Length: 98
Image 1 (spheres, rainbow, N blue to C red):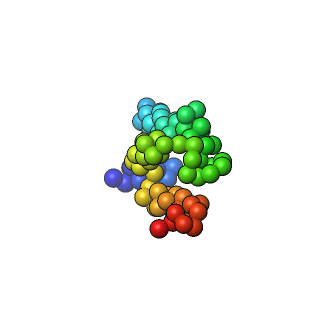
Image 2 (image 1 turned 120 degrees about the vertical axis):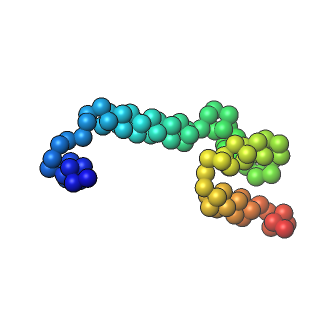
Image 3 (image 1 turned 90 degrees about the vertical axis):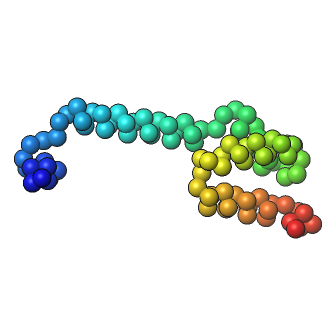
């Protein structure tokens, strides 16, 4: 146990380099996956552009909106979805907010 602690703080034996390489490879893979998830596809960009420009109630179908919601639901924390829902409702005309 004390040798492991020494290895962490620069004393004792250093960690096996193959373990370090494996850890770095896993970190790089996780970073690449997070980056891939953050990048929108062309159809997602198109949907966002249609939603954010012009009338918020036109330019896309209910089915398309639900499809995108279901796609991101498992990829973002609940509080992010909640903030997006609040912002969406605020963007609606006053007579449609109920």
